Length: 261
Image 1: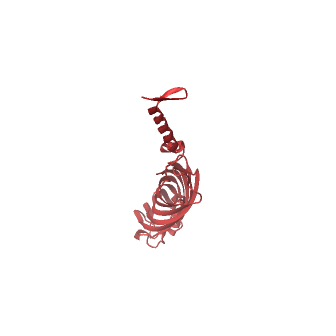
Image 2 (image 1 turned 60 degrees about the vertical axis):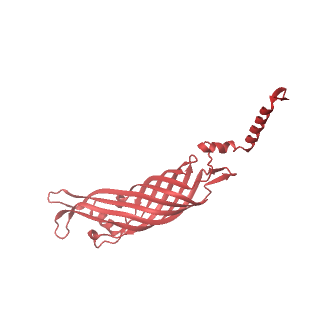
Image 3 (image 1 turned 90 degrees about the horizontal axis):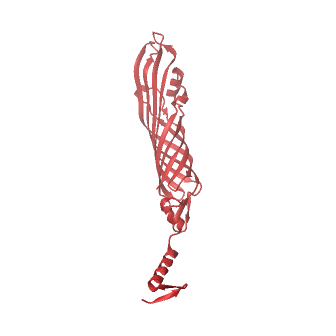
């Protein structure tokens, strides 16, 4: 086999061809930083994510503005703030445009409040005790508008998520609610003490506004925080005949993790 001298050493024709192929391959290879995007080590993704899953926890402040709450706080050892509670929430967001997302969301809020009548005792001079349960489960949809780009593209190969991305939004949906009072009560006409259980539940239409921000930790994972105000009122059942619609409104503050796909 013939050979030629390159750099003072003999090299075969096959070796020269192999070296040229490697050189050409290197010239068209994906940039090193983008290649590392497969394991997220460089902060790149090969495309802009189209789905984001979020799980959050926080505190739900209940407005408790209707007359059933006024009656409870007047007659029982309950404050309006007692109807507020912790909350857990989850959402799935779908990219509609570089700055606009559609989010489908659900949350759970529940307060169980032990109490007794403020001004009445039973025949044995013991407190007249009961418990109030107040639960709200909103199932909603929102349009979220990011106030700054969520990320930027690098050529044709990669998308880099922004470190900080604030957003605002609005939406609506339905809320399942339950209000239960159970225990001992006073008949204000006869002054008898009796045990009973009063319940109202149903579904109410909601509207809400949100503001929040996403903080990127890695290409696929980040922290999120959100403030939300929800407006809703529901009908009272027969056990609470004569009361106005129950106030289901309130504000929530939550924080958690999101995962991009």
